[in-house]
Image (cartoon, rainbow, N blue to C red; front, side, top):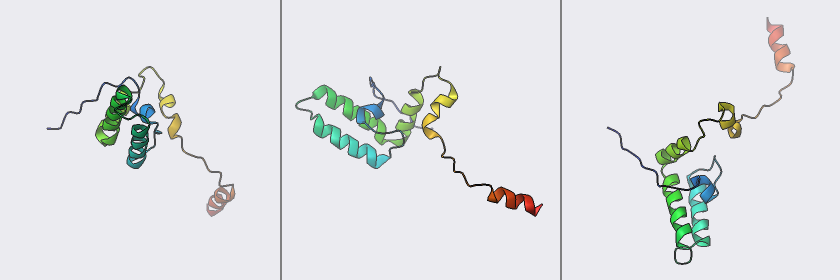
Length: 105
């Protein structure tokens, strides 16, 4: 059967902890992790380091990342609000193509 994936108990969204946008890829996650580790080393800030490490462990595996994203959604929110960041850009192409298509008929 399939593997079971467990999420670390994080107080916040892992993307917020690392400072990564929703469309950030593996490289962005790794760079953000390394920057945060430099900012909060384990010998000076052990609690922050643990939180950053758990967030990175969540975000580096694509399956666990997707599971965390699905669990972080507020079920009471309307569906269009969940897709706000994923809106497609509308490009105005002008009436020429429409007029050309109408002339063909």
